[in-house]
Image (cartoon, rainbow, N blue to C red):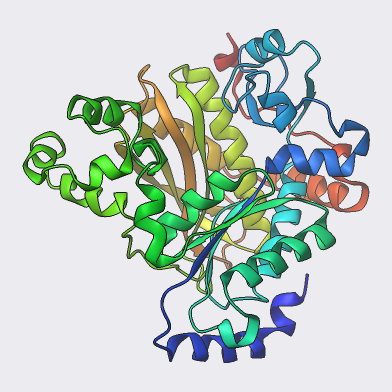
Length: 410
């Protein structure tokens, strides 16, 4: 837990080295395999080899949040209703989410990553990018680092991870997905265009089913096809974004790896395996994400003044809505209440492929439980007591009731 502090000097030396070098860019994408389910299996070895899903029980809002690879073999996926999941896999073992535990393990893994690079960007609870430029003299090439990271995470946490590497975040992420589960795939910069060429265009983040259908009308089905497609055709169908797609098809992505030294926001998002239009399922997934964010805020001693909802529709258009809280908070109640209000204002039965929530505009000074309105002394006391019980006796000792009003249950 104190790894960051103990390695601060070494990280600063690596930072200077990384910023004073002309070495080619080298990026790793680290992705914990079936993270929630894997943590449950690690903590309860009797679940190993069985179809396990993390989610909420049957009922109107019963929904799957994550599934083991054994469960996925039956078609059980995130955002699937629990009722349908049980129909597809009668022997499914359902475990309720324990976000305190997932946050704890995530923190351990992210702290480990500091060992190999000072520039680490955590993009979700179970994945991160590492910029390795300038660190080769300390740790070797990307393949060497990836092997060591996999070994260290396995030893320290007992979990398997998949790692992809390349000259850009885009290629690294595609490579990690291609290597799952428990894989390692590094794509040299000079080979990335050739490696991407036979891949379906859907491997590029942002090119969903609708965009794929449009590209098929143009005779484009692979990244190689996209790379050689006429600019005017792409401009006509995709506007100014069209030519950019050609660059992505050959792995060109200059987006930097943003280190998390100065926390500007904290959030979680979930890419859904299937489009979800059911408002009840979306609210349950949102609640699950808020619980995780709220716990992380409390761990870091932060209070958020702003909540942002993020949705991505079937055409991969990103929709964001933001609201200021009456009072800064790190409690699930006010955070979820605000996020749910935003969701209800936007989602009117349309299907979505991604849902996320983030918090920002942080403070650590404002005292909770002393205000009128959403943030109450009662909820603060309950949250503190629950956190203390989980810390002493484990996450399973207490479960939080749904933050949905009785009006919503009708």
